[in-house]
Amino acid sequence: MVKTVNPPLAGAAPVVRAGQRMPVEVRPAPGGHSSAYARTGRPHTAGRRRVRLAPRRPGRLSGMASSLPPGTTTTPLNRRALLHAALTLAVLAGAAYLARQHWPVIETGTDRLAVADHGWLFVAAVATGGTWVCSALAQQGAVTRPLPAGRLVAAQFAASAANHVLPAGLGAGAVNLRFLTRCGLPVARSATALGVKATAGAVARAFLIAVLASACPGVLRLPDLPVTAVAVSGVVAATAVLLLRGPARRAVRAVLADVRAVHEIPARAAALWGGSLAFAALHATVVVAVAQALELPVPPARVALAYLAASSAAVLLPTPGGIGSLDAALALALTLTGAPGGAAASAVLGYRLLTVWLPLVPGLVVLAVLARRRVL
Image (cartoon, rainbow, N blue to C red; front, top):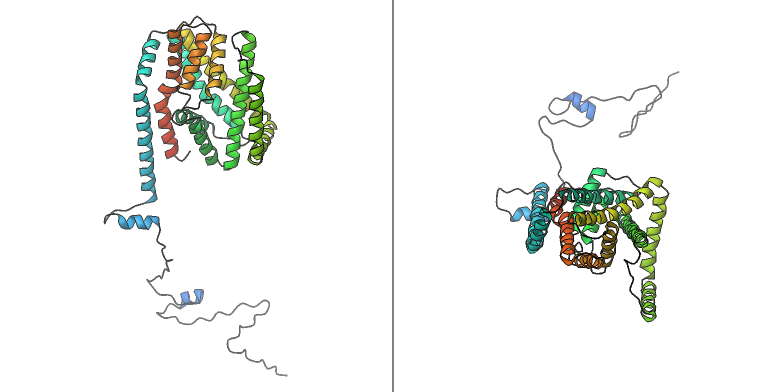
């Protein structure tokens, strides 16, 4: 019996049964390259490659390049380098302007500190350096995610310098916000972390004031406020809360949620509160050490209480780094505690020299370097 097999229709795919291989038809390709044609199924053109380019869209870079002289090339790296160089020059110019405006203050403070006890001044300098470490510790405690320690301390050093250029702590807040977002935190979570740190700092300062006020009775006297003023203040505060109940409630809720998340990790809670307490205590230590170097006839506990009370009152008048407001409040507080006027002014100048003027230019340079390395 003879089986007849119908030939496949033209254009139909060949039928492949199990155990059989796909037949490959080898035909000579143009140019004689049959093997390449068998592998790829399309002719091969020796020495030629056709590359289809996507149509180039005109953008800002191409528009800038068209306006440059012939032979000039523009790359994103060159533009970034020029931007960072301009930022560095602007920062240095701002530092030089501030130093020139307050040069008499710097010169007077330097002359008075030149004849002071250098041992106590060294203690004050070490305490000043410790404030940046404590600030970094408190910032780490305000977030649950681990942050790079070295970059965090450098960012706090740069933030302290930026805080002396912009008012009301905006410089330090902007630097820390940028650093946290660079570390991978969302903007909302970074802002909440800054709020947690600020709240912990205020509570720690109030705790130290209460402890020192109980240790030095009669030094800190609260003004007698009439009942009417207290009632009006309460009404104004309640009205503000009602008007901003939506945004304020959401902000408070976010801060409380982050506070609960931080306190679920004991190490983070210890870093937050320990760093906040140590930060305020070390700033008070700087003033105490400068007062001891100048031989102020005031006990150290009263000097520390005077500084904490003056720094809390200076918040009501926001100036860059508290320059002016904190100086006047601290000089007045030291005078009220029994220090002579000239010695109190010298202590304020020494404190400002160590915490503001000497670290200002290095801090701004570190700020520019961190921005150049895209840490900020």
